[in-house]
Length: 621
Image (cartoon, rainbow, N blue to C red; front, side, top):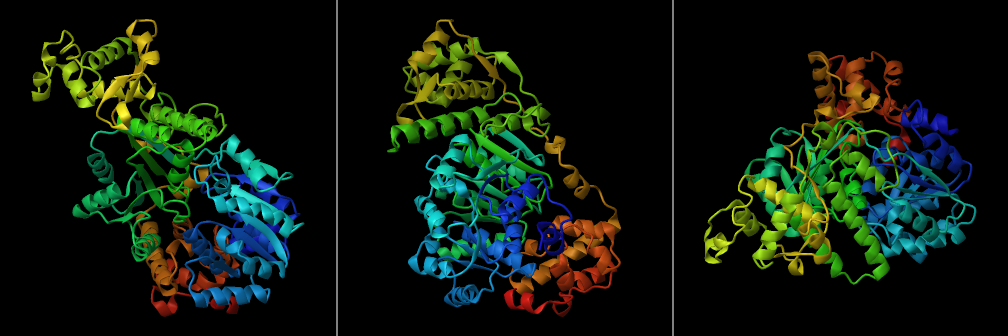
């Protein structure tokens, strides 16, 4: 079939989006490609459609078991013969998938790189006709990338093992250096590079100085009851501590990190994939491969070490195109700790230099005084015309001021107290607070005691944090307790030879200014009570149908599809087929039940959850 026929009849979409059409036709005709496209931009269709248009089985390499499982479940809902091979697969399912592959009845096979490169797997695949090879999360192949996985380097062998088979590498996060490395490491010299904009118009991006991060998180969550979200922490202990604090306040939450027992991780992941409104508090062990489309927020309680890591993680929010919120809480401790860890790294100097450049870019993003989205996109080599209109800096512009005098006062206080005290003590000295520590050290007798009494604590913490960010200060031995001057950067400021522009820390911005795409705006429009009731009835039906099949609800229909059905009130299968995302298989399988819901005839009982099912769908689903 043609790509357009596959898109319409199987996936239920009337037209490709953005670069999809070019990519699909290029790969279908046998060309290699490197696809750079943001999360939620439709990367999967770029290999799934060609897989159905070319003869043989398409091979999809992915390091992400959760994503493989979601993708396979979603494809089986479309009556597409898909399977996966990975380390956590039960023996019976593994044998079933291998038999389907051997008999030539598999359209797409998802496989982890470790499993793929086993001699038995390669021998089995070389006996089959391979339609194409897709390498997902391709940034993992690059030593410059933020998720480098050495086993990905061996994937370069695929070029000689499967000559003439088109290969497509895909990633949502790769700066120019990483892109070059992907092409070289995967031996894709003739690959055509397709780079879509990394701009996510439905994502409100905000960064706030950290004070009490758990309290700040609780305040953020107050208006988000009934929503799903992810909270990232820098340590395993912190994830468990924060998850417990949320649970104590009756907020559905679960911790997730690499140190949990496999059964605990599977339980947390299953709960999240079930569609329940909940908060997952996690380290970066949770993130890549999370396919749930209705994640409404991502919060960072600790600063990531690079814009690539940050963008990858906030990409989990708003995959359905509806408005979502990304909040970063950061402080001087984050900056100091990250620089210390980097200085202690055993990486080669060339790699450390690149890591240092990316860390400084992340610090610059956190401290940005202008449009935060533009600052982020510049990290990926993309220059956006004009401000985004949907970040905190656009909503509440930063107030810049000449902070030279404040900087000199802060640096002098650190120097005169011996460069052995942390932020709290220095702020107390500047503000003239006669604390026990200040009096015991005799610092209340210093000429500069109280020199900054007219400004509050938040102001001075902001000054010290920004001086850390610009490199005029550092933390001794990486411990956030003792601030000291960096002579080459601090001396010109103290001598009055260099001016310092600072910004005042502003109050939290309201995300209502977010600009969303026309499609998302149409989905997010206000609806009348009857439409809302139909939508909720459809969601209840979908939840029961998902439970009956042991699949996540979103692989049946996204919320956006159910909203459109509720608003359109289709009265026939022909009308239902016009809804974006309702392809032939789903129309046959679910159409009658959906129409009963829309007409108010019920249809939520398990024996009425399906409107019909083809033999192939029953076998694979």
